[in-house]
Image 1 (cartoon, helix red, strand yellow):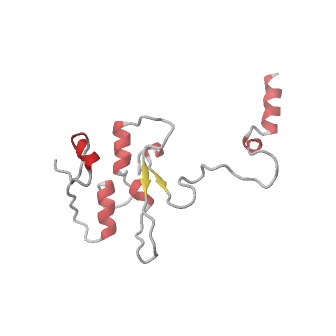
Image 2 (cartoon, rainbow, N blue to C red):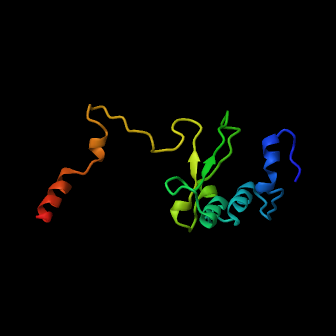
Image 3 (cartoon, rainbow, N blue to C red):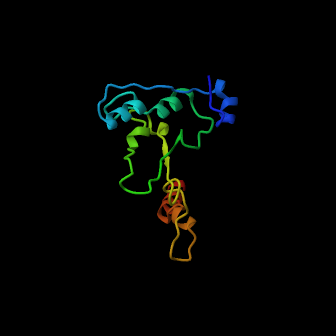
Length: 142
């Protein structure tokens, strides 16, 4: 397959990757057409292409997300295009096959950074086993 000289590294591995050269849909509006391209169906609720690939091929690391989605950042609200979570959702597949969006501002992945507290107690004390569970376990073990 021909690859532009602007992509020399891609040209070296072009025989090892899969490229989609054309996509066609009967949808007359952009939103159903994009949903169709990403999920294979015009109506939302189906699993995305990334979900099917991770479901069928598996993943090399069971501790990470099946795949990540890089969304564009826009310079103005007028230039922004809506990107819906359904475009990389797992649909009816288990949620472990859902993609994770990488954000361009703030934390790249939500809910992974350490929580800062105003008190001097370390964060681990809020995530350790509550005292009543420890007390209950010691009374039931006897």
